Image (tube, rainbow, N blue to C red):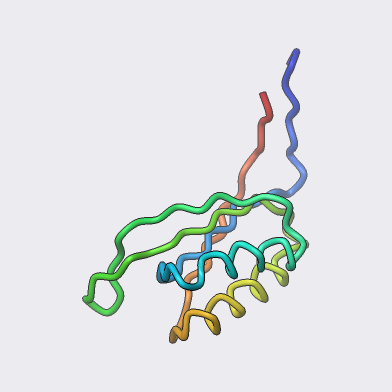
Length: 99
């Protein structure tokens, strides 16, 4: 494929779903780099937790399978900063394409 790079090396899209708190967003963005990730997408939305509406933050990171432990560590740090009972980690196998 001319002009395109395909990466099929066991990549996954990791999605960390947490509560959005404006006071902690800068710290959370810093944690992404501290855990070894060079890029992420941050999406703000509205979610439900135990039937209650809350502002939500979804952090998407493309990473290798071997980085799952770092994703878990990042999620645990976010959970602590946001004083939450739990955060959700989703993992989806993907093929990345840079155009």
